Image (cartoon, rainbow, N blue to C red; front, side):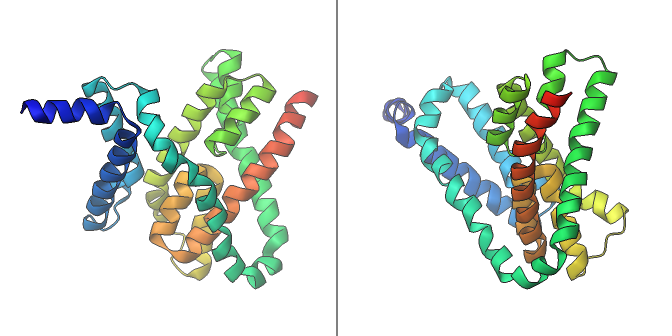
Length: 241
C-alpha cells in the first residue's frame, strides 16, 4: 500500500498523469458505449468528463497539473478537425449540387440557435454580459470564446455554454429526430447530421460520426460553416445593433 501511495504521488505530479488518465478513462467509456449499442445517454465524451472531473476533485489534483499531460491530446484536436474534410471530399459531387441550400440552412440554423438563446436569456432576466455569452453557444468552444470577447460577453462562460450545448445535442438528437420522423435514408442521415453539427458543433459531429458516415460528413460540414459564418457575421451584427 505505501508503494502504491508513493507511485500515485509521483504520477499525479507529472505530465504522464493527465495523459494516462484521459486515455484510460476514455477507452473504458468507449468500451461501455459500444457494449450499450451506442446509446446516446452513454456518450463517452460526457462520461469521460464526469469521471475525470470527479477524480480530480477526489484526489485534489489541480487542473493545470492535469492539463500538463492532457495538452498532448488537446493538440490532436486540430488534426482531427482537419480530418473531417476527407468524408466531405468523398461527397464533393453532391455538395456542389447542394451548396446553395446548405449555405442557406447554415445561416438560418445559426441565426435560430443564437437568436433563441438570446431571447431566452433576456426573458429570464440574465445579466447583459451573460446573455451575450450565450450568443455563440452553438459554435465550437475556442471560436465561441473569441466571439464572446469581441461582442462583450464572458469568454470562459461561453466555453461552458458551448460544451453544455454540444452535450445536450449529442444526448437528445436521436430522440428529437425520431420524434420528427426524419428518415434514416441517405438523405435523412444527411439532414440529421447537418442539423446536429449546426446546433451541437464538434461534440454533435463526433456523435454523428459514431452513428452513420453520411451523418458524420454533413455534421462536419455544418460545424465548419458555423465557425466561419459566426466568426465573420456575429461580431458585425452586434456592432451594428
